[in-house]
Length: 258
Image 1 (cartoon, rainbow, N blue to C red):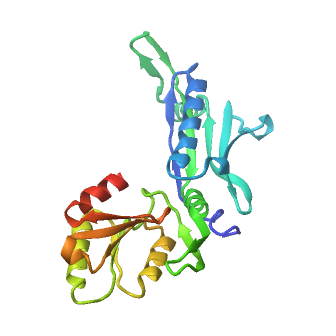
Image 2: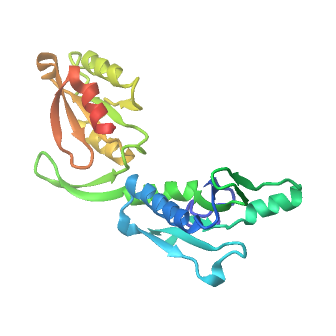
């Protein structure tokens, strides 16, 4: 990598789409895909104030482009491009048609005419998007512990759809009465979501570990569980805890994660 971590690498992954449109409808579809691509990042958790659309000036445009706009993110090292959306007119099909000798026009039956479609092309860098999601979700917060002390909490506040681990099951201790209960609870969720079973260290340390990797929900099996058949579910960002019957746990998590 020439610099800025994985922002710019010598080999990278890119997502592209060639969206074919009728000439004269290209400007409408160009605006449509600009809004759709901007919303994609927002819908997956990136703060809107950290994003912007930057239209290309005339001297920046490729010779074949009618218009182009970048979706940019404010990284710690400044504003930089995540992806570009371009109105490429009919350049692509015209070139293919010229060198292949094939007729690539589209026949519009409804209006009884042929035309060479224009192309609107969103092109997004996978590595840059991943870096933006990681940077934007990283938090360092001051929180009050159960004993009343203040400590720093590191959180990877990933959108629940992006979090690699959705649920962690944590027995309060390795007590013989809790382990079978916790294993059974983990068994009920691991087939539906990527999950972890963690029984190493204090419950507070385990919460912090899950916060750091972005796990949205922790399920704690405690000494009341064998009696009341319920567990405590903790939400990552608010740290709020609710008591949920074991029988209803899968349905509760399904609702929260859907």
